Image (cartoon, rainbow, N blue to C red):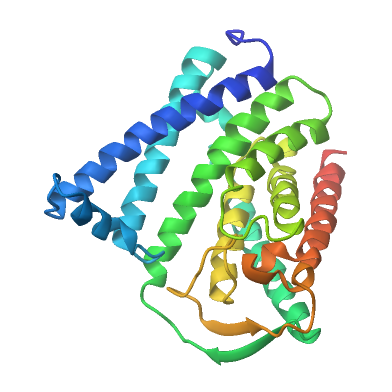
Length: 297
């Protein structure tokens, strides 16, 4: 059947409040269940605040909240695809058939990308290695939480928003620009995101590198595993993730030397605040585009 709303950009915009409302409701259920199971006094705001105020990436509470967020996103997507798009939920790119290679390539690409940036920043004297923290068991919870969080964002911003915007334009770059703008705005409240002009620009560019393969394949697994690896390996190498501290699982400890400007080192926002990262993101977006474009010929 034809979509109930013909314009894909309009469908994407209408979906945003639907998603935020449904996800918020499902997350609220998760919060209540966590509080009840933890024996929190529901009538005491201080008791509830104490439970959630010191959460870290390796916290089981964080993992559960992320799972409820993902569940809320699936609920919103089901509503939108069934009643607005009038097509199966699987059409957003969830097929795993013959996608193992794309998953591995996405993860490997993320490791090479983040590891390469770490090496470059170290070689130019932007960062100084202060120690090796070693393995932390909490990394298992962290990896599950980060995977669900990455999958959640890819479902929304590539699987639904980019997918719908592509329905209304033959120009993949216009669709990517629209979905990337919404992706950047979602992160506009992150710590230190406005410290320089680079972080928001990089977040916008990140929407392109995450979405470019989807414009060819209409499948979510390369961007999901690349997104997951991007965040996971940033933390492993000791960088903040979009301005958020990663002490709970980093294996390498380092600090900015102050020998280069913040727009080079990334400053308080971490590696995503560096013009080096921004330049590599743009270059790699083109390389991914060229790769898939050659496959299409």
